[in-house]
Length: 121
Image 1: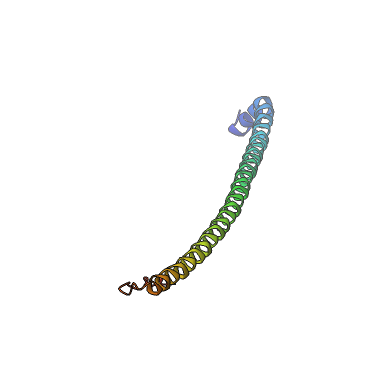
Image 2: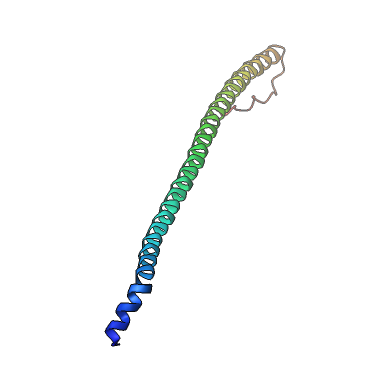
């Protein structure tokens, strides 16, 4: 029996099964690899969606906090401006009172009165 005949015989007996198993294994490997890639892609997509959802939530929270901070700032500024107006009005009223008291004292003969201090407004 020649070598070629031996291979033909072995291939005839074992080769059909081995070749079929090899081809099946090769296609299965390709299929398994494709399924693994699909699973990784799907997991990556889900992770991306989760990350995007978290980032969108954080962005909304940050925008809400910024809106509240702006509102608080405007309210605080308005309150400070109101207090400054009240203080300025009270200082001018006090200045008028100081001048009135000095005039009354001078009318009574008291001349050694220092003028009221400047308001710096």
